[in-house]
Image 1 (tube, helix red, strand yellow):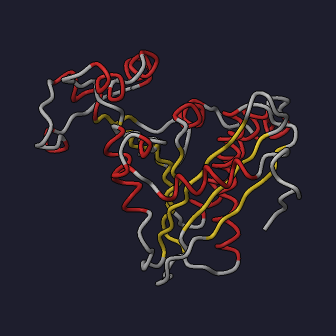
Image 2 (cartoon, rainbow, N blue to C red; image 1 turned 90 degrees about the vertical axis):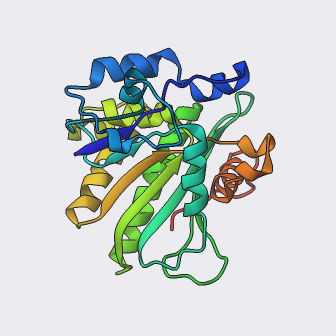
Length: 262
């Protein structure tokens, strides 16, 4: 069963706030057209929110998983940041890891960068691990973002291969476009060699997720609103900021050496 928490259609006191919390029309079309069946549970609606029945339908809905085997979560931007901030705390738990991913592309420069950062499980110190790639032939931000998500899954597979105990991984990305592509994608092994990099990376995300889940590892992809700390420091997400900075540093014209594998 796949759960998607979609951004609610909420009323706002100001135009700027409404612009932030109301999803673009394609998301609403996606909700109406994609769901095979919708079941509502009034207990899932937070008491702090006053929502109509229609708004609740957009905000919390479930449908039978047909494509992506893991979970995809999209919440309102403020809730997404609170979740991400909690995931940035020192990871004293074993078995659960939160990855923060980002891709960087500048239209005036060739190539892109992709990065992932995470706190090691069971680590008591204020320490982050990181991994990044220089993508020489990728000149599209969505492709770089998708590669970064795939990179996080590869890191998780590598960690499992060296006997690091993992039961659940959360992968945070600020790209709703990539999450939608992952959800819409019809997995097919032949797509590994597709000429479109975004199709290849999406296929790889599916395959890596299936590989992790076959090992008993739960996989969750979650959207987080980026760069809100520029408006108010209270919205700072350290994992996002570190992944953003590392992805930019990994771009070809920024990096003096090509980043290699782990």
